[in-house]
Image (tube, each protein chain N blue to C red):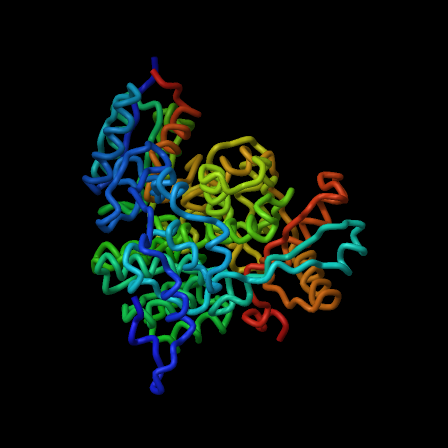
Amino acid sequence: MPNNILYVEDNPDNMMLVQRALEARGYRLLKARNGLDGVATAESEQVDLILLDINLPDIDGYEVARRLRSSSKRELTSVPIIAVTANALKGDAEKALDAGCDVYMSKPINIRELWARVEAFVPTP
Amino acid sequence: MINSKSSDMHGRESVQTKVLSAISMTPSYLSHLECSGCGKEYPHNQIHTFCPFCQSPLLSLYDLKRARQSVDRDEISRRQKGMWRWHELLPVLNQENQIFLGEGDTPLLSLPRLDKELGLSHLYVKDESSNPTGSFKARGLAAAVSKAKELGVEKVIIPTAGNAGGAMAAYAARAGLKAHIFMPKDTPFANIEESRMAGAEVVLVDGLISDAAGMAGEKARAEGWFDVSTFKEPYRVEGKKVMGYELAEAFNWQLPDVIIYPTGGGTGLVGMWKAFDELEKLGWLENTKRPRMVSVQADGCAPVVKAFQAKATFCDFWTNAHTLASGLRVPKSFADHLILQDIYESEGTAIAVSDGAILESQKQLASMEGIFAAPEGAATLAALKELIKQNWIHPEERIVLFNTGSGLKYLDHHA
């Protein structure tokens, strides 16, 4: 059953919160702490959904989304991507959707909403 | 206790002093805070923002069983006017911390000419423009700033579409707190100027309130300032809920059939529904019939309407939000699930109106009833007309529109 979720996030507090929330629902969390690591992990592992922070230390989340959507690994062109950001800059949501993300969520992440959003793409294992 | 600071140079008592002197021995029945998402409980004598576990808003809970035994609704009605006459059901424990500028007890006006025009018989407007700083935001910020002061906070920060900033600046000034305000650069000039006049540091943001919220949140975390963003602290909603108490009292402890409310962050809608719950538990209502809650948004920013139509429990972030009603330019409320939950529970609805319909209704309210409403308030009349067309409203129903502020603060739209 598909249940691998990749979270690309450099903030350890957010990572821990999301890990706890998703593992409580039976999902397996794959972690990447920067954008390049996120792209590499997505290309090397079986990934059923990607949670993508926008403000990353190397390439930003928009670039990560664009690289995933143009990846030679076919699954990545359609894997659900949920953008997660503190929307500190104007138009973050619009840019995230334009870059290929399916959904935009702003921080702080409401865990019930996160569960609902994830389950809409990947049913609870 | 009489606060000596409330007397003027001749020793005369101010209105605030009279209000305080009417306060009973139990200032508040606040018992604890509870997460609206996971139900976790938190003590009220510490500073809290939102639930650190599930990141949902925290709500204030009161010992209503004890309050029911000792608080008399009719005695409250006899007190001096103002929001704090409901102090037993508000979160401030020490009356010296209640910051009062005259908020609350706004008029509930009948609208006889519009009644006739629209074929209705019991149409009212709760006119919040008479609050200090000219909007309903005064209620929430009075409660939040008072509680912040009580908890020892010295610096407060807020992202705002406009009126909340002006209100926070005023209450922070009176409380002696330093205010920092992040608002979109196209916020009405009145809001920018009133905030600066009250001594607040104002940062104009190239974006919407959601962008301002992101920046304010970062600043709050970096500087350790207390973030008074909508629903990211537990007390603004407590001030707003008093609108619900006042309505119940005005309708002789029954509730109107329909409340039509403009929804940005949704604090008022959620607050009033909370108030009705509390009144029911207190046994103060004459019957258990609740109003149908109508959430009104602008068609250029209608996340609640879209979610309601999809029967969703959360809103999608609304992209490219635009409307002249700056208070409605909220792409996603932090309490969207509470707003939707209350609309569903009330068997209400959510409706979007155009900027054109808002301006037309604003003129109609002013020319027919003498009320120069804020665009957000005028949106409720535009929504009412649409609901009448849809036969969603019965002509005999008691309907309350909410005018959330004064049109005088939006003169930029008429220049």
